[in-house]
Length: 568
Image 1 (cartoon, one colour):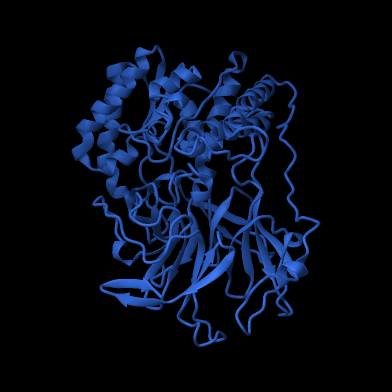
Image 2 (image 1 turned 60 degrees about the vertical axis):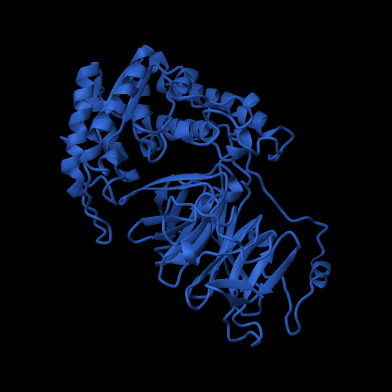
């Protein structure tokens, strides 16, 4: 349902069919929703705000009443079926209770069955079709509930289209039109596309984007959570006031939709102008360089700046040919109401090897605060907001023409604690941090991978196998960097804590235990192991660490202590 709404075909078809009634659509779906729990309720501080006087959004029915819902379209059963036939009875009871609660409030209800699982063309993924016999039982329960409650049923399981997915379970963007037209056909609504349909769908997608920024915003923690008393916005308004300005923008976007549906004029998206950040004209580079204190034999020089597009750089990584890839943002701390995020990955090259970048290319744009980046498999993995993307330049022009969402559903309750600090482990897994204020519920071909609060993830990208560990503050509270020594021991740094040894806790567990720090508290961002042959002998084998509170780069070594380590 998350991808269906983002694609916008079904909403556009229904809007076109009922243009005179000017229907409104609101998406309350979250990744990994089940009949037992829905993200729009269980996400921290949504049902009840941290500060009582701030209220909250209430339970699911409260939220449906808030938006004035008269029809509920729901789709459940796929995630639940992966738990096996043992959960069928509980599924039936929970789904029935949901349907009854919707009907009690006088709403119409439409139940969609899941699509069947497919075999992926990726040999590294599990063959999910083995789950179809169990999924069929969940579909049958859904049909029985539709008959019992006398609600509308759309069956996508018994008469499926083929090749809808790439990973076996999620409908690809290219196949959304096929699925959404099939839904419309079963509802008895012609899915013809008039000449205005393209413009209508563009308007629907834009409205939906604004709605998500309102209903599922970044920095939810700073709206209704334990940080709701902080000032965390760009302009003169408070974050709460800024957030509420999205409502008239959504209303304006719906006026545009209904005008197009009635073959009126298209007033356009009416977005604010793009924000352009630049360096301070009073900056004196020579003076800044002279202010550095560096070890003997070292020097610091300016490699690249905002002249190459480096507006608020966040991360950097190198590819095998020596190009530097830097993620930059103008969006942080969150999308300004009505704005379209346009953060970038800039590729920099030092062609004459003088230590200064002399070529800059926008490798990818249209990103939303990319806090993680790593080179691999001929392209770039990027973590942005709720998603992990894979970006690749297939024609050699320096721009990523391939862009795929690998996984989504990562938490963004606090935008400076979203998934970050991507790095390959010695055994080929992609590690990254996940900070306090964020909750992740990610659907994968292996099931749902959840991480509550602060912790870490490790991902095998070819298998889409995602493992959380050290969740709920067992380790660092705001992980902002991971480093590995030659033996594969892993160490993490904390933006508000210290240095932690991550090695003892590489598996998911609910037996939570707070691991002690091995380094003093500080404000750390970034860690790297030093093993370059060009470095002095006394530095090799040490770790570098970014200490942003002290405006310095520190260095430490490790020594054994009992069964672990201590800093020295």
